[in-house]
Image 1 (cartoon, rainbow, N blue to C red):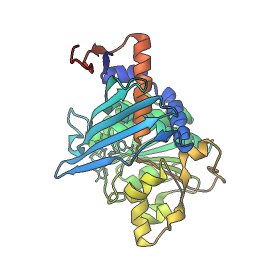
Image 2: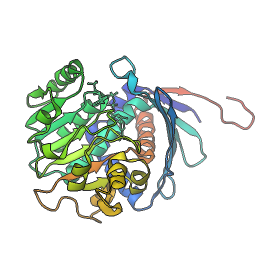
Image 3: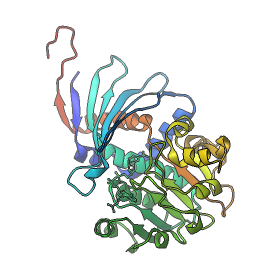
Image 4: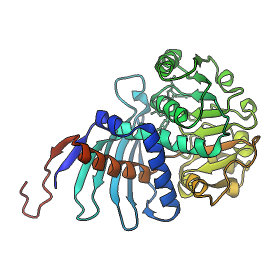
Length: 335
Ligand code: NDP
């Protein structure tokens, strides 16, 4: 069976944000119902550079998608022509096990991560939430703007990032997509004060968002830190908020935003309210009152990449997009 190569442009063409948000809702509710197999991912640290990750999953019962995302995360690439997340998703069809797609992981990661935050925002933010703060100015800052625009009526955007030139470039990009002005702030506190929705999308290892800056009723998508010794939120903020995650098992192993306050004794094991998929299924309540602070801690899951991979291959086949290659896979080695 031929294998379809899908580059970043094909991914962008086939995966509009609103469609991806719905796909992520379907995928995360399936995971919650036990209709997916997803071992913890393997992360190898690359000294002085970043990390190399391998993320396999099987989606559906019986399986509808099998696949793996393989990627490097090299934060030093930010500000260069290369993405800090590079790699591929390998998509296999579950009937005969053939490799049906090799897909650019940079664009999938950009879109699916923001789509999951969009889903969390749709489920947890106040209906009237429209004052958006983004901490960070990279790939995820841009895709998160698109995701929040897809789920709430945004009336104000403030953005902060440590390198002012990067913040200005991101704001200029955002202005062309936003129905409202985009302000660049020189301090994170100025960007955060009064915001209804706060997205932390930085490569920070220490908190960039502090409890005393956050208003009652805010919703936070904490996306940047994905290792046990890194975090973006202060311990008191995590303690004050109701904490939702993409996967409890992953958060207990990988999320510094949970593990560090836990080690400090500021929160207890049961501080995680539950998974976003369970909120979507109505198994656990999301926001209960307007004043509470909700936090969605995103780590990123293999099921998200594998479900997107299957969807992209199917759509590309329908529309005749991508490049077909025959890699073999036959018993006699012929192609
Ligand atoms: P980029 O490399 O494109 O951007 C990184 C951003 O982090 C830049 O805005 C940079 O600011 C900022 N930054 C770097 N160091 C610091 C610091 N010490 N304090 C505050 N800000 C800092 O990365 P992405 O946008 O692709 O990803 C952002 C984060 O999200 C990364 O940590 C990434 O690993 C994580 N991520 C999480 C995913 C998930 O599923 N949860 C999926 C994909 C990414 P400046 O340019 O101004 O210096």
